Amino acid sequence: MTQHNTPKPDDRSDNVEKLQEMVHNTIENIERAEESMAFTDSEELKQKIQDKNHRREESIEAMRSEIKDEAQYRENK
Image 1 (tube, rainbow, N blue to C red):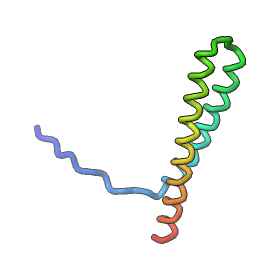
Image 2 (tube, rainbow, N blue to C red; image 1 turned 90 degrees about the vertical axis):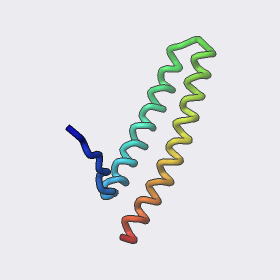
Image 3 (cartoon, rainbow, N blue to C red; image 1 turned 135 degrees about the vertical axis):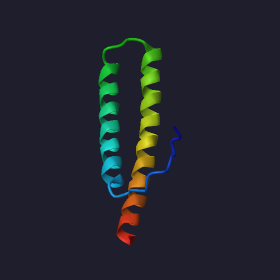
């Protein structure tokens, strides 16, 4: 039996909403991580949390940029 892998059509109709939810979830993760730092004395663990939160903040910036792109695409459609 042969399967044909055909790509799904490009559906960007809900990308803005999905990205906004991702931003919201990432912000919550940052807040939880910061709260967890209060329960550790390990400087190494605190640094790892700070590093990860920094990467999360960079991801949020990228997602917000993509939200703008997707909103513009939606307007120009």
